[in-house]
Amino acid sequence: MSLKIVVVGAGIAGLVVAASSLQQAGHRIPVLEKSSLSTVVGVGLHVNLNGGRVLAHLGFDAVRGHACRSHHWNVLCGDNFKQLSSMPLSATPGHPEP
Image 1 (cartoon, rainbow, N blue to C red):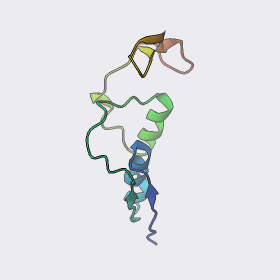
Image 2: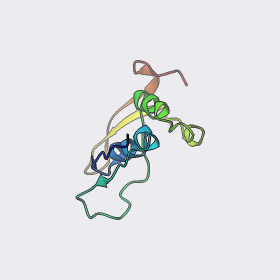
Image 3: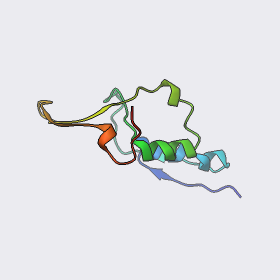
Image 4: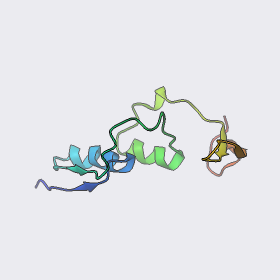
């Protein structure tokens, strides 16, 4: 039985849900977005380990070999990009050593 499941929000989470196993199972998935912003506002996407596991489970692991590996976690001020803190990712729980 095919369902019509509406996804509200065309951010990364909404698009992943829409393109995931729901659509692959034959369900119709319209995506609704209220923003009229149609320009590129970012240049990359960082996915932590748990997010990567979810994406792999949904079948989105084909791009894994094209990704770059991060070694540090930097926190920057949104106004002037001044570095507020930095930590090696190997110090975070569950992160493999580089």
